[in-house]
Length: 299
Image (cartoon, rainbow, N blue to C red; front, top):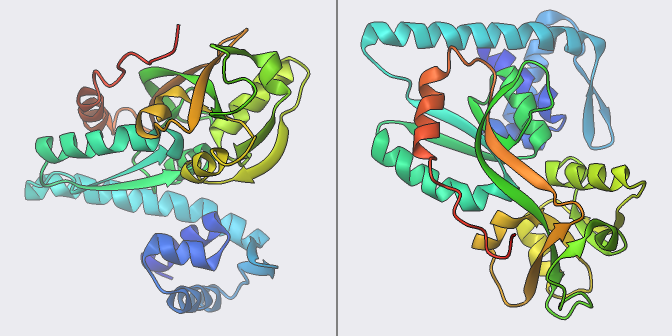
C-alpha cells in the first residue's frame, strides 16, 4: 500500500463510480481498476461491491477511508512545510465553485489571480454544494465558493457578496407582465429545476416548505445552461440566483424578482482551516472585492 493507491482509493470512494473517479484523477479506467485491485490484494480485503453502475464501499472501505484521508492530509501538510526550506510558495490552488455562481465569477477571478500570482496553477472544479463541502473536508479542495452558511460541521466561511433568488420564465409566459412574483404564485408553477443535490434547489424547497408547499417539478437537469436553453422553448419556469442573468442574458427569457418574502442568498468562501489557509483566504478576498454591482430589476 502506498500514498498513490490511497489517493486513488479516496477518489473512487467519494465518486462511487470508476468513470468519474478516473476522470477526476486524469487516469484511464483500467489503470484505476488495476490499482484498486492491487490495494485490495495487498490488504487482503474487499473494498467495493458493484450495484448496477455504482460501486458500494464495504465496511472495510469505510474504515480505510477515515484513515486514508488523515494520512493524505498529513502528507500534504508535510509537503507544504518543506516548501519553505526550498524558498518555494505553494504552486497550485484547487477551488470548488457552484455552477450557479461560476460563470459570473470565475473568469474575473482567474484573470486577477494570473496577474497577482503568475506562478500559481489554479484548478477550478464546478461542483454541487454537497461535493464542495465533502472535498473540503477530505482535503482534495483548498477553498470553496458557495452559498453560506456551510452545512457541514468543521467548515468555516467568509462572505463575499449578496444575491437574490429569482424566477426565470420564457418570454411568453402568463406571468410576463408581472414586475415581481410572490412565493405563493411561484409555488403553483410547473418547473424545470436543478437536481436535489444542488444548493439552489435545496433553498427553494426550504422556502416552500415554510409555506407548507412542495415544488411542482416537471423535469430536472444537472446543468444550468441546459435549463436556460430548454426553458426558452417551454412553458416551464425555474429559480436561479439573479446574478446568473449577467452571463445568460437573452430576450427569450424574463427574470422576475421573488417577493413575500424575498429570498436572499449569501455567497462566500468556504474553507476548513483558517489558520493554515490565512494567506490564501486573504488573497482571494482581496481579489474578489467589489464584485457585487447593482442588480437590475431588484428592489
